[in-house]
Image (cartoon, rainbow, N blue to C red):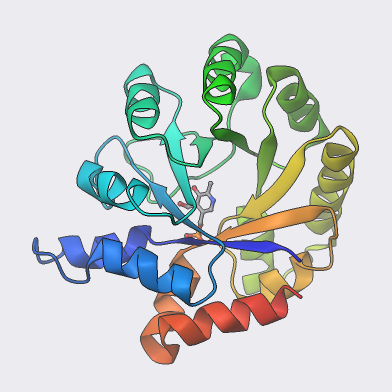
Length: 237
Ligand code: PXP
């Protein structure tokens, strides 16, 4: 059974629109977990546009499995080690991007990534690298020593939404998942996923976890958060 990580960043976006405390992030994390999320994902961005430091502090105090997405910077590593989430996923970050636009440049950052992955591994924090679906990145991820990779599904999701031919992109993801698993890496996937993408990607047995945010939170407006989580989990079976 694949696991579902529910990304609650955009509940924070809604909260921040009024600068008060509703909808409450800690309540959202607890509620999503109670309704079947296997973990909660938050991205503490450098500009703190949605999740804030106190959200992280509050969620790590609970027993909810927490996946913290963060940029590969010294200050973020320091914050992660201080708060000790269960999992971390290192993502590239550009200040002006709307969302995480692509995977990490592993070649350019190998030395630093190796160093921080080693630190997280020795602190018993499960490590993941957010990468584009190509075999080169899988091999480099193995070399860097990460426990998991998360394959960026943004391109596939866009092709599916635009009703364009997505078979080449899907094949790339499939191959990466097979090679990753054969190398002993846990393979996850995420970005831009909706019901249709989830149904298609769920057929890849080698993927063990999805991290889904924007669509799932948006759909909850109409359907309720609990029902939406249930619907995703059903599609993942
Ligand atoms: N996985 C990672 C690593 C991400 O950076 C994001 C976006 O924050 C997601 C998954 C979720 O993407 P979406 O909000 O498009 O579902």
